[in-house]
Image 1: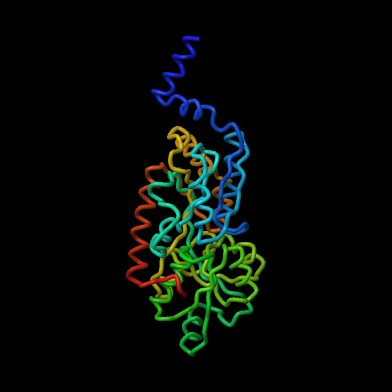
Image 2: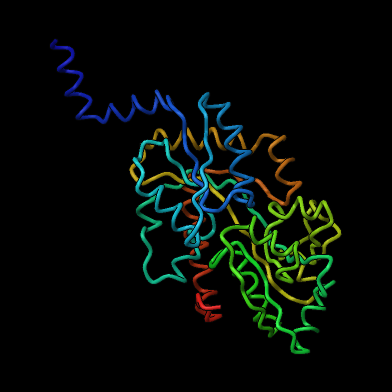
Length: 320
């Protein structure tokens, strides 16, 4: 009895419950929330990572899609979750861009979330349908200057593809109209069906349509060509200096035990270093990253500063 009382007192004083929880973690299924609809690039990466992570942790890792609100719905859900490591977020670059577009958000990225690991870096492409009148990037300029109103689809307002398109507008002096969707899956279908003549997106959600010949990549917004599609030129090569990449990483609610964060970080780093994972993702234009929670925290800060400055300088607004 005395030993039990002593253990309880010691636990309360030293935070032993959190340590015990971390050692026992996980002992039930984990939910990985994707703030976009199923079938998009974020969803694709989340599912392959979840599958491999489940094997390592010996517990199911269930991907749950909560789309809408420029990722605010899914992010808010995770922020409100119990900070025990069983509800995680596949965060996107919207964590860095949303503060520039919205005066108020239902969460504070710096205080309501704990970064675990940066998983991927994903360049943006310009796509079109083979049935569209646009056959190359120069056609976008030509047709726009001839007075034709061209529009482009993206996964949503504030996404990096949206930002890339708006920078493209300003670098070229064009006024392409934004048509935001609730995720890449919907945007890709619209572009492949020629409902929208252009799409700014990552390769992953468009991969199946590209492979089937229903979507044509015109250019990549990167410093160099991607091994995934080596024949596709960079916008820089075409005289349009636009470089933009999405990124996806895992975060947990603030207050999650540090030992749980460390365990997740170690295991997810192992997953993104797995050659089968790297090969599968690279084929779809997704580059794996990895690193420490501290590095991811700093990266989010740097991305926030960069994109918020671009939004101010370019005078971008939610109205499209």
